[in-house]
Image (tube, helix red, strand yellow):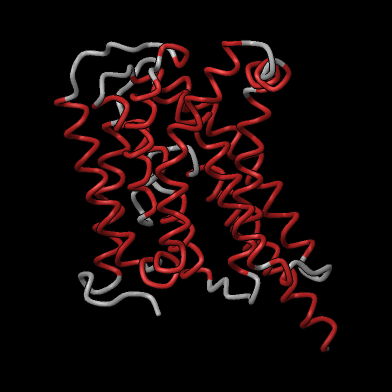
Length: 280
């Protein structure tokens, strides 16, 4: 009986890992906030294992590796030409300039963000605020002046990075802040979206390395099946989301995502009693 009970618990945990991996993969690169969705999904699924935070890092790694795989034809020449190609060097410099604000603020505020801001109430309000911001940018953004990533100036890349830093608040959405910030600064929707994918690589690898360093002792053999399930689910679903978004932005605005964020945020506040209570 104990063996059967233990097996059932393991199956439930694997199912939860699969669901959370898919949630991470589908939402990481869409302007809807993967962190916010993971916080809410983890609360509702009661995914409260001791290594839950480490699990989130592992599935984020699965999602970011899907970007590396999808853009491998673009990234490989950069990696091999870094010592002699000005195009490759310029590409990396742009990413570094945009990466810097979030990296500095993330290191300074990491503990505060994890301990104070990771709650469903914060996420709900950030979802609504982000949705309103998307509606405003789509309506008021200036005409596009930059249409290719290689045409971004270093100063413009840095300004986009400042916008990305807003996503340190759970629920804001890293991709949403980057894309909307780029569009507000005169970058075309397609270019801003593509740059958001590339910028995710250093940002998410750095965040993953930091979190893994702080929770390395929680990576055990017993947890490996759960971690592997979530990792694979995140990789596959993120790859699908990347391909979907690249096709979507070619002919659509981000307005549907804005209304989704607002509706979902209001639903969460309603479920929490009008936003009067948060997670503990």
